[in-house]
Image 1 (tube, rainbow, N blue to C red):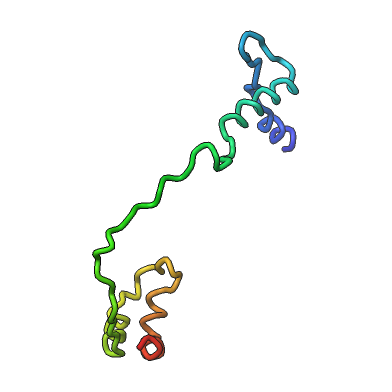
Image 2 (image 1 turned 180 degrees about the vertical axis):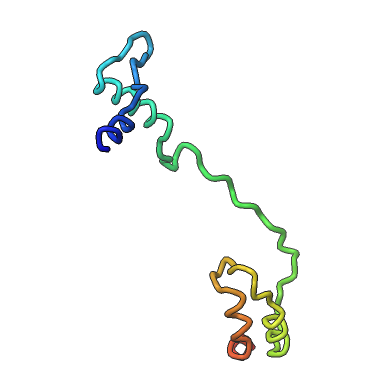
Length: 111
């Protein structure tokens, strides 16, 4: 059994030889260095200096501010009771079934 398993674990297609520039590399240590150099050059970390972030967008200041927000217990209870309990949780990780079952408990502090 183990001889069969070991025969299947052996790699049939070895890596190499590799060419870098004008020379051919055949030893395992040299090939690992060539591959390491190639992949480390492709996946470099960002130093944050060479490519600065763009300026954030600017907004017009003529937009009126939302000053009054009226929240009533009845409106909160209606919105919570209308939730579909078969839907998955949102970005807040609260499942809609829990919110729907706790409508009376949640609605009072939201006033």
